[in-house]
Image (tube, rainbow, N blue to C red; front, side):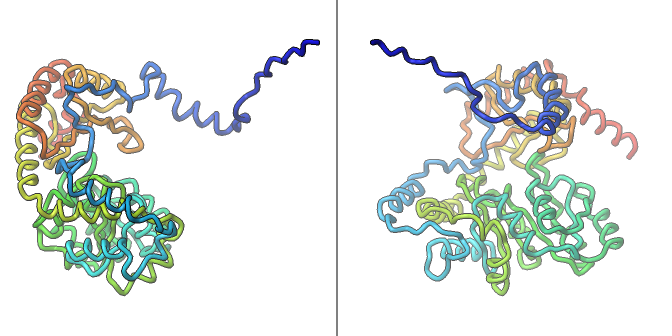
Length: 413
């Protein structure tokens, strides 16, 4: 007797979502997607072999460096008895601790911590050094992870106008001494922080200051030690943080601290306590990367030369990029549909940047971010210049909201 197999019953893979969540998606996200014709803003076309990629963060072009790869391979071959555990347990002669000491010494500080990411470094440090009785003053353009650290600390956060030490001074006079937080180079615009003035305001009010050097570590200062070192301010800055996924081209974060705070932070920083440590080949690779970065003066010179050249070109053809000066070039088209048009035209001309939109930017201030690298060739630089000249008449950047605001401010001043 033949046994007939029953056809499988079609069942949902997941249980139904809550009505509240579905309402939030319909309210907060679906209209954005509909306005873009159902296309996801962050995902354009795939870059082909002839594309110029300006959508990464490897500023010194060190990905694949033989010294780094060799260190990673050696660690993978020998570290077969490694114990995966929380970073809170690492001490003594552990390679992670040795790297922390080397990084801190490079930056002219006493001690430091390696974290899973720059996000974890910022949230974990601020959560440990601030509390509900600590007013925290944060530049309005500061990275989201810095604000998340303020929230994790349950500290009263006060935003001050971007790169405006006078406004910071007035805010601190009103709310009292606490913690000042700035980026050295701002990640969406490439704007350089007036760090000397910010440090002076913090000192005048008896406050601590934290500087996120994610986009200046490796690219600025002696041996790439960052903007604080370049300006001779390291000894006046209480805490330096950085993502090691930029010039270090790795996957980690770092922050400095006085040696006397090490055990306190080890016992109170949640990302450090509740995250596993980095793997041996990652630590070995970062240790090798530190030496590569320190010895990359020629690459830093090329990066700064490329920055000056391409910034001049984009400004000359009418792109309003005056809000920045460093290796990050922000093309702020404004509303998301206009940014998609800009992104598509750039990609049509073989230039690939990264789209930034809310929550990484304010609403209706989305942009295409172009990040430059020391290893751009003459042919690639010339191609980007050609693309800028071709795309400008198509998107009319002189009519973008940021350009109109700039003209209005110029008339007022």
